[in-house]
Image (cartoon, rainbow, N blue to C red):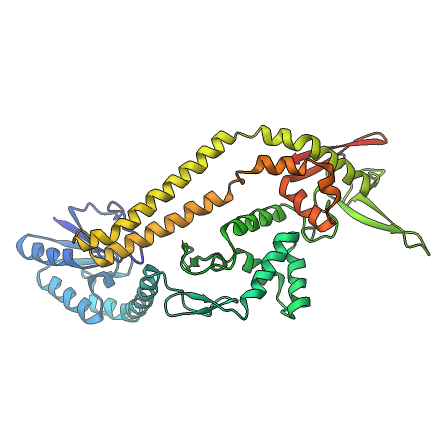
Length: 430
């Protein structure tokens, strides 16, 4: 008994299937990618050799229309070859195979319609054209790429600049509402900050990104900074990312392990206010006492000025440089291959469709590698650490600006209590 298998794969839509994943002892597997040249060999072998079974995944693999599928099933039936679909309830050896086929007709039609739509979208991806739908705010759709909308792009740029300056998403949202009367939700603002389109890239529904497809509103350096700020804010307790005080969300009580919140105390008929840090959920009895906010802030700045240069000096910069160099070399190598594709098409080594597919995969790989490179710390971290280790630097900043720099370097500030005294332990991000 001879059993053969046949697969048709559209490389634009799906990966090449595993040859061994059949559940049958297959004598030979015929595979087609994009075109059905091997399907002709299947029929030729069925005519010249004794073949008992043809195993396929779905009936749609036999043709692009119901007429093609039905014609090929009848031809195989005439040659005495039994057809079995592993992912559909169909077998030509069933009691009534025509009834099974009729039951699958609507499913096959839906699948073929869906496939044609997805193929159209896939071809657009190969050409790096924008996906279907409305262009993001700040852009409009051109013939084959996004074009900056000069009437709305300044609003987007101002939003990003405000976020980069203060590190507060809610603050940037309020800023837009106040200056431009542009009201957006915090969720929309977060989506803007993460949207690859504003960085000059095009993202598709399959989560793949192609870089440098159109003019960007923000630079790569600004995009990397935004990603670091968002990462820092994600580590903070809820609603502390945009809190007005710079230490909000960073301080933890070492005694009860509770995060500490900033409380304001005023005296009746006086304008003066006093700020304290107290545990939010203290389980101790009596509860851990509050600590003056200004004292903690002064000690934090003093500790940063003393310990930050030592922490940065302890980083393995040669290893970091080597990682960056390897990623840079990988990007350069992929770009070099990308530049060679037109010559390969011109020499007839690759056809145009295969070259487009290869170019698309290379560009998505470049995007992924570039994203890894952007997440690494900046190369000038040592000089930055020296600059922020000067006490006068911190004294000249506003609370919101100070909040931005503290979260750039600090993961957590722990207060170690010793009877009535206390000291700080700062845990840096790196």
